[in-house]
Image 1 (tube, one colour):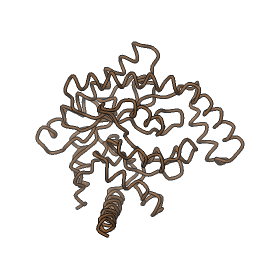
Image 2 (cartoon, rainbow, N blue to C red):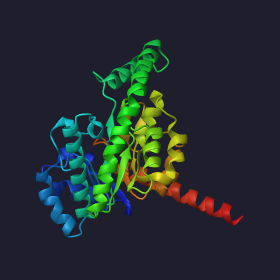
Image 3 (tube, rainbow, N blue to C red):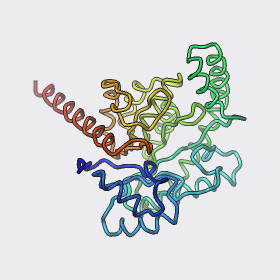
Length: 324
């Protein structure tokens, strides 16, 4: 019997490939002690046929859905795409329609938020993959890595403002229409796992700052932030904590080297670094574990116990400090 995970939610990305029915997938997550799930972008209409009755019966809650939802096979509207930043107006409008469809499902299921991958600065090839190969073979400080990194950064900075503006225009449209339709959900723009993808934490802060009052905030993916910090894109701990008041949801996992979606503390065996994100988790309105299939139920439970115990300790310490 695993710990009751209470307000914590769990992404279906962990076990979606192991199941042919939505009911079986959700039952396995519930057996871990979770009461809520995040329905990720690979959930199909077919899987929803047996998930929706479980939601209606109150067997499972839905904390969040991950755009594009339900699953869309077209890579133009997948997770690694220009998406809300398309210059082609027809494709941008389609991306907006699909995000609003995700929001409609979130509203229907009683979810609080939609996780959004807003877009990217397009490159002719996957420069992030090339950089990661050099990182593993020669290291971040090698001349080969530094040369390619500066090439990436130069193009990202030259085109970034344009795509950020397009993304913001799309998000403004989405938020306005969502509010008009009464969906009542937050849109969380997610920190990404590839260096040419948007937003960085600074870019997220810019959009959020310019859209004050909109149902929009940061979806902070801890593992992705760790990865981008290691590659050299931004100062993850400092910048993420500076945005703590704007976090609408969090993906909880850690990165070992440049491999993400591992159980915090357990797989890295680093018992201090992840503490830097505990205040963000504690304050976040939606808390979702986003773990890979290799994580076992025992590891997930142990990781959760460590996180919640440490958060409780921090709360006690703060309370004592306030009383003194």
